[in-house]
Length: 211
Image (cartoon, rainbow, N blue to C red):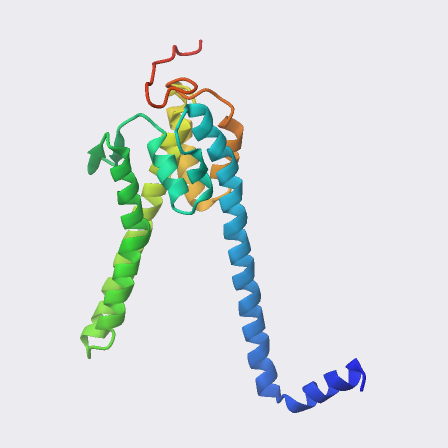
């Protein structure tokens, strides 16, 4: 029995409905694989320049750039400026800014999804909750986008002129809608000196502004 006979036997044993289901499942799996590949590629693209930035800054653990979630911790702590979440939350302990980012980016959406799933089983309340949760979900997306924009803008400001603050804010917002914008910016800046000087992460100095 050759391959063509085997394929004919398989085709004969599958109904039209089964073939449609397999087609949709196959398309879904294909796009899931593409999505995962995209995440891995984006992670690696960011990790390389971020490692260079942390290493040149003198941070003791630049390898965090290659670890998921730890890379965003690195992005948060490299800048020396105050963390400011649109005036609502301010701190010089930038690790707390990272915790806020985790909360609005991952923990809150998970919590809201769990609550929505629980309420959906309740009669009448589930119907009303669906509208409320949709509104809350959009607020969560906005809060998450703001957190990412601040994270990106703060890091870029560490390597760009103070007069370019408007540009860094624009690039931070752009990175929310175009994820590749952040790694590209990091590649462009990874060999530049941070505002506190090369190797001075633990003993920062103030560099003079370029004319």
